[in-house]
Amino acid sequence: MRVWMSLAAFSIVLLLPSGCSTPAERLDSAAAGKVHEGQSQQEVRQMLGPPQRSESAEGRSLDVFVFLSNKRTAQPSLWKRDWVIEARSLFVLYDTHQKVENVVGHLGYLAANSGFQLDWQAGYPFTPEDVNGIQREVTTGDDLIRRFGQPTVEGLDVRGQRMLWWLFLRGHKTRANSTQELIVTVDGKSVVKDFVLRNIQPGA
Image 1 (spheres, one colour):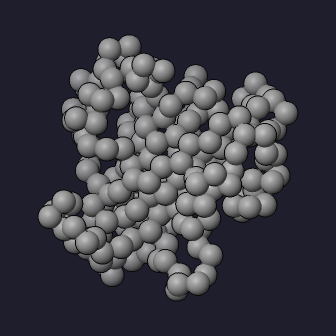
Image 2 (spheres, one colour):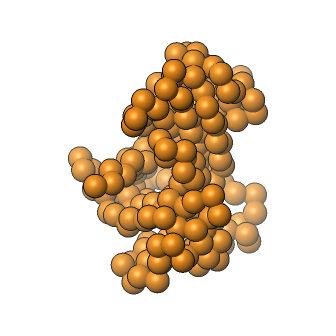
């Protein structure tokens, strides 16, 4: 039975004043090359702090670092909303010797309906009908992007396969209190291998 890693229930973190080393800046630096093949898991965690998610299988392991931040967009015509959530992520895959084997960094966006002062929502709320047309071994990642837009997060699973996440968040002030995830695994030719749509409530 496939166990799906969740990226749900992350806080929306307000950016710190200029001059501070924020999680976003650390992820940007890592994606720019400070995390590289051959480093140990300990070295990566000393640089970035503890991962938000970690999993292991068949001697290999995966650390997932995710940072969400809200900001007023400079291009409201592009998003049709004044605010977006930036989703910075870094997936670090380690080999059986706990050395970095692969690194994938990504910057995604969710259009939001408010400035995060009270209740808000961000992204597109999926229905079961939205995903009924997805066919394993037939549908491609490009097909999904045409239907649903760019994924919020792109990364790897612990077996090194490419993963695509589309997120829908509801929250209050700086906390997301419910999350919907469409999680898709694609092969080297970007053909869908597996997928799941799930709704996650606080405490789930």
